[in-house]
Length: 389
Image (cartoon, rainbow, N blue to C red; front, side):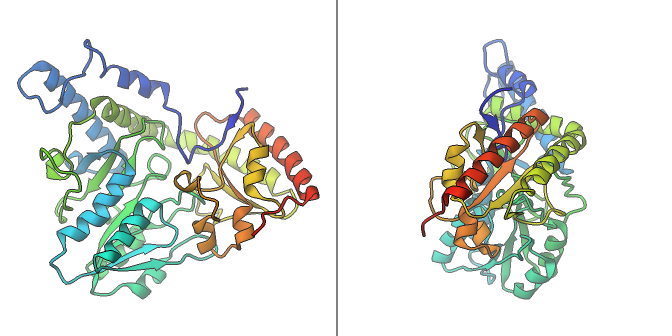
């Protein structure tokens, strides 16, 4: 067994060896290294073919048309394109309200705060203790001034799944557009845009065993195209300029294709490991799971360990790679804003740890983690290792 044990798959995943092979084919002189925009020779044609194949693979996983897929640098850029781009495309219109939630990723929250400075009204919904935003909660704040609703599919900290199909229907009933950050759900939860009336989706590769630095943006055919946030060449139907990174795109396509074939098998195995971890950890005194266990992605388990300081606890668990929350806020000593929005106290939020399990996690690793966590937790509770507010 390799140490430290990696249980932080929600932060990023190792690249699948099959994806690495596909990417390598696009790097050297003998491969498909050309610029996909070069239309006058075979190197460009081959690269463009790889891009087209990947676009189809990504579209297939979410039930889209390949012409509805725009390549970006990742879900953060896609979120910005959806929120700022849509707002700028409607700047002269009468609708000036954006609705999101207090537990969204910073890639959604920060663009929303930016739009507040430009005169847009932003409403931040607060979930229940289970982390779920219900259609009724959304209905209460929707009106004819609402331009866009942006609610993530799977929360990156607590793993709770939102019913984006039902939420999108509510938004459309008031003439509003609907966007969802699906970085944590693609390849783990079934997404079918033929059945879900969503307008825009943000996707990335590195959460499902693809490379970092590449993502995609689904734009439903017929809806208003967002204003580009990156200009300079008119690539990707004018929505995202820049030379396409063929090797990363091919890797993302392969990762999505593998996920489509293996999602059910992966989820069954990962869920069994997650439940094994949960059963053992919840036997410890004063522990509890944050967020709904019924509506939850298989690989996530966010646990509060009362009576200890989560940061010091993690430092003591040096042979296990876990986190106290989102990787995007890991440098902050502030308690998780997601857990705080769900009603946890500062002490509880500081004492909570996110475990995320993936394709390469083994039963041996789970048992090792349980043993180490149990011993260290009891030790630190006896020592009174509390966070000092």
